Image (tube, rainbow, N blue to C red; front, side, top):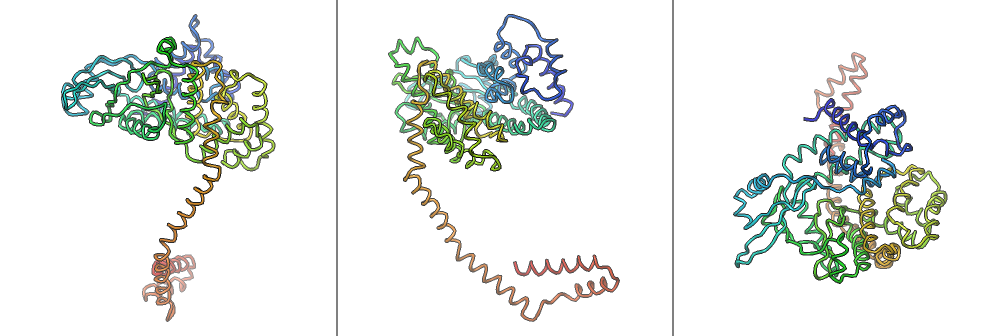
Length: 522
């Protein structure tokens, strides 16, 4: 059970492990809390010296602390404003790899989930192929009713992972609350909201039925997309701790040599990755938020196949409009409109000047146009944009954190396939199509139709409201036709109270009488 003392002890151990691996020295002094200088000086004294890279040592520290810290590290890669740009870059390289757990444990989980032996669920279940902080994946085989064999991917949840995460999340919340209470900057960064977002993401990952539902929804959204798909879910062999999907025969996107040998056009694949992500985020408001190369395959038919839908992002219409207009504003160099979008979305407090904010955005955007296309990063641009908004009291928007993190990963994948990829030219058709569809004449007509529908629904309840009003009027008329009559007991009590001069008691009794009248009217 998590306790305050236990939380502080776990945080102290985590601090020691981080300091020992030199993580504390990688935190930008500009984001360190006031008064923390002695702690960082102590951390420097116990730092272990060695030839390993800072990213490798960071990965070793987080792996030693357990799966919760690996997830936290991946999540903080999106927050250079919290950990500093240097440490954020190291965290971007962090891979979610953990030692596999024993085969017999996986088989026991499967048997418990389906209440039957593993041999009755799968004709074959191989040793694990990959293991991460939440689950591990096996290749299996099932026999169809017609006797044909079909290969499947079987994902099994780690044993005891829910308890571990629950305890560690208690420590993260403790640290976040401490940071917000001790520092105005910590409050602005909404550290507790950051942990909230992490907690929601992890809790959904730990119920594999939710991942199956996410895959199903993504498949439905992209059914008409010519160059993207997700594996089909085997619902008969899926439960809270086990997920079964079709097996994907394909080439991972980080295997460039195999992709070339298979005759694939790498620059075209880069464009598919970037446009698929933007299309899902803008068009559907539902996107794969863990699109690293290990989760992306190219099928023999040339389609991009995404697996592992444990982390998904959602954007409401307001956030999608914000993203589209921000990107379009930078594409067209309309800085004033870009600034206005922030104010319309409520992301910047209204007491600031739109023109001053536009000037700050211009300071980010104008240097872009003096660089080559392959030197421009939309992910870094969004990071800089969020940093500038801090000057204008813009609070952290948790709903945009996964978007920013995924943008960083997707851009890295696309650049790896085509180092010369022009991100803006690639994004422009998707962004323009969304704006024309949603902010053009068709979008305006839809908004009017939605408004008319809301009015229509209100009109449907109008007869009921009128009837209710008539009942109230009749009750009021009956109650006051011969004057307001109180019960003899109430009148006698009020008289006694007034006779004693206890005005407060009288006032209370009159209030009770008034409430009785209101109850009659309602």
